[in-house]
Image 1: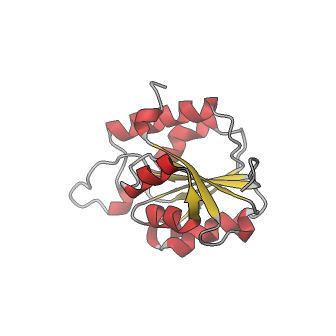
Image 2: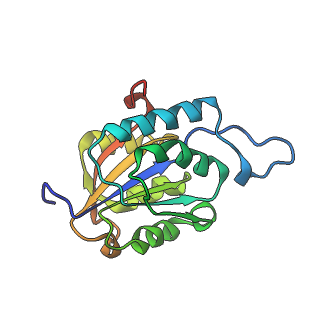
Amino acid sequence: MSADPRSRLFILRHAHSSWALPGQRDHQRPLDERGRDDAFRLGAFLAKAEWRIDAVASSTATRATETLDLVRPALPAGTPEHLSDSLYALGVDAYYAEACRVGDAGGVLIIGHNPTIEEFTVSLAGDGEAEALETLAAGFPTCGLAIVEFGTTLADITPGAGRLRRLLVPAEFGDG
């Protein structure tokens, strides 16, 4: 892949969440204090980064939308957002569909859940930076952010076509 990729996916596992309260559905679980702190620090980190994010797709689960709320200030004003039940309830194919839906966007942030987010990232990464691949092999942490680059538009991505450039973990975000 060339030094200047044609497109990038920023694949974000929602930040750390609390356990469901009695009577609360899994879909309604909110972030806990650690999760809010990690997502806030990720937002501050992204605000300083030079990556372009043109669109966002997020699961409709509370912990995913709260993660988006805390990251949103780092995104360009008016960045299109799409909330998708599919990213909560369906598998890897739903993640591919969301990435392809925005077609010609140069950079798309997808916020979702494990184990699907990890399976999606693994399926995309035909190769990658050794450190990023090692981190991914150890498991995709909450509020982890994978950056996968492509030589094609997102509408044309296929399994194995990406290069895993980085997998950032919350310890790398700094103090915000």
